[in-house]
Image (cartoon, rainbow, N blue to C red; front, side, top):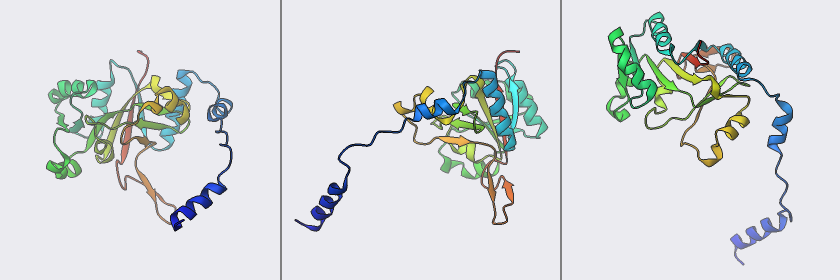
Amino acid sequence: MNARDRILSKLKAKMPSTTPALPDVAGWFATHRVVESAADKAKRFRACIELAHAEVHAVTSANWLAKLLEVLRAKQINKLLVAEETAHGDAVLNDFPRHGIDCQTYDLPIEAWKSEMFQQTPASLTVARAAIAETGTLILWPDADEPRLMSLVPPVHVVLLDAGKIYNTFFEAMQAEGWANGLPTNALLISGPSKTADIQQTLAYGAHGPKELVVLMIGDEQ
């Protein structure tokens, strides 16, 4: 018996004879979070993410473009990075140029326009897959249309969120969205603008990512 076999033999000897029961995760969450209405979840999500310095606007599918334009003008932003071949990206591309907004698309490998992306792109628009009310967290699944740099680099990040996709907890979101059936190569959980703190415990925003996070929360038609 060589050294490897001896080590494996000792490890196997110390293994439990029976497989321990898995924890009842669903049961725990069922007793620690009451069922909430969609309106209550949206209210709690908004309260939590606003505490983290995010800016939230309640909009509808009919007026979110107008609100986005209003937000950009208030912040004196005249250039926006959007995802072509998406419904929200195409809506912006079809409407905003006539309002003087230069719409940039992510249609080249980042190596070809890295300088412009990092130095001349003041804002971006992406869509959230879902959100978590308990922590005020947006869930983004970057893909070929909306690579993760769109949400990590521009100083102002605007996110479209369907209020019907707000879940009580992270566990509920994973279950309802079927995460066990497949995950992206990268998933983002965003709970406000980027922030960091030094040894004096002074919180600073925008140190290594977006300085501002704007959420357009699409709810019921008004």
